[in-house]
Image (cartoon, rainbow, N blue to C red; front, side, top):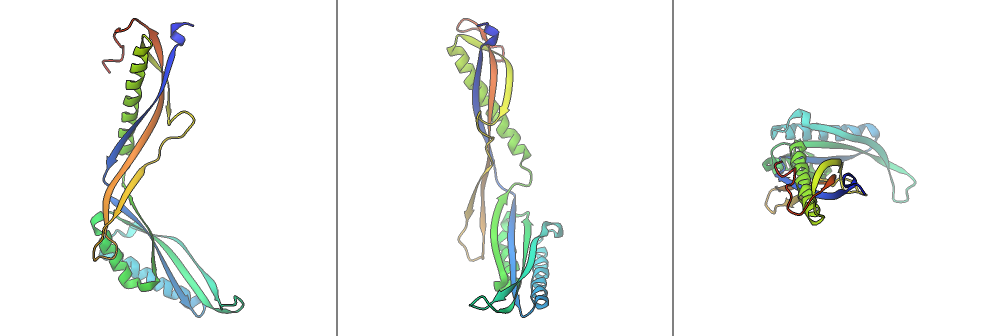
Length: 222
């Protein structure tokens, strides 16, 4: 086989870590009423109060959004007779200061009372693209280091890159991983930012150029 047909294909991985700088809250409000209009009115009042309370904690108006709403009948224990109606409203709230999450939750809980549900708290990065770029670069460097070793073991040196595929062969690219810590304190729901780590995987194929052991690697200066 011609030396130009010899290849080495390796998979490299890299990671980059940063502290999350935003928190995404998924909130819900549920209110009961004797009829549809009263249930909707009550839940609407709670939603308006929640919005005002969140804004009082420096949450931007544009960071409060409705994600779902509806109303349905409530039945008696036998499930036969309608005894009232229940309205619900789902809200997404973005808190751009992690240290204020507890205060935001306290504020909205204070105005919504037992009608409030906190469905999820998600720590995130406002811009993950830089973290992804760092992880990809680290993955490529890892792949190249492995390829150089295999080339040396094969009495060859690395030639040109033949292909670059994000992810491992037979699999997809890794997803961001997040570690979140819940703090124990008097506030209703304090959080610790923890870390968010992005892991990238890349599979690279290089041509192998035949050479004696110890020959200079053309890519050593890269």
